[in-house]
Amino acid sequence: MCVEVIIPPDKPAQAVARWQPIIRYTKKVAELEGIDLRQIILHSHPAGSLACYMAEADWEAHSITLCGGQDRQTALHELAHLLIEDYHTRFWAQELFRMHRLYLPANRVGRADKMVAKEYQKARQLYLSVYGTRPPWWVRSKD
Image (tube, rainbow, N blue to C red; front, side, top):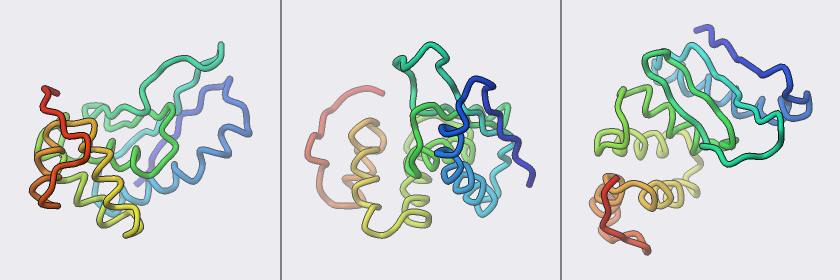
């Protein structure tokens, strides 16, 4: 699988070097999962740091745009979107929890699941069914 990595011309070489481990990790997981990932786009803020999303998946373009998310959990989150071609549904949360177990160190799985449950209602419901307890900041809200 050939994944094109798009790097903005204004992104300093030092910054690009810091992204290389997560780019390699994302490519490897996509290959293992059979995900049709065609592009990884590094987002850039030429004028400095601005509020921005961590990452974004576009399943029609088979791409992931990374901005602030230089971690495995963010990469898995976006790859789960590409895998199921859907947003933050229960099925997406199930796939993401499954991927946590396969591609994160065992001692980071519970924390990763908890962080997803903190942000997304469907993941909170899944967290309850998997762990038998509510996450500590259980809030009933709409996604």
